[in-house]
Image (cartoon, rainbow over the protein chains, first blue to last red):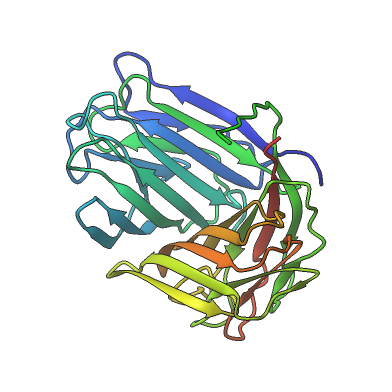
Length: 170
Length: 176
């Protein structure tokens, strides 16, 4: 038990013209945990869905829930939702600004439900900034072999990136 | 004086120890932790046998410190209200502020301890706790000791057991 075991499985960068999704397929079950690192901006304006990236596993959009705790610089918001998401910088916020988000998924290949630890930041030197922590759950016993990040509105813009890492515990 | 920057290309996220509980257990302890890393990260995924238990953490050198040398500041949301608070002079670190470990294997926590073997400084932890039916927390903790950490203990703080199937892994992170 002495080998470094955080390994890049795949990365994707959005090209000119944008794209509505990042899609990681055929994820091997040989790791213990997964970690997604997302740097992104969308072509949509801010609003309830225009600044989000929905997380779905294995092509399923069912059986997700979460608790979020959100600071926007002028207040704190707390609530629940029946999906899973990370925040993404919208098009009407400061130019060249991209959000940073992380999603950690322990025991992604187990037959238990899949819990997630998510953090998102949208600092943009403007009146709207987001700092968000999220506890999310996918109530499904299937091993995760596909992860899709879908822009809540518009497309992910050029230079947006997503990295998927696998972490082994031995 | 000034800032010294060291550049390295070594891969440095290394599993030190891991446990999957085959049966319920009152605690999990990682001992004889090597001092050869810069930081350590503990990852938990599981639940407890009864409600109203917090995920608790004790640290030590040789044996865990059970004295009132711990303090925390937390930010916590349960879906209906957000709170921040703190606890001083406690006998352990809270990882979830509202003591809501679930009775299913659906909680996780990621606990980072920077410079865990530095004998000149008290030890600061930063953690995230996640239970989508309970609470989302971010917590900073302090263990007021200059001893190098070579043992850590995680346990439900009000007498419950961790559920069978709960997993615990300790990783080491090297700066060079």
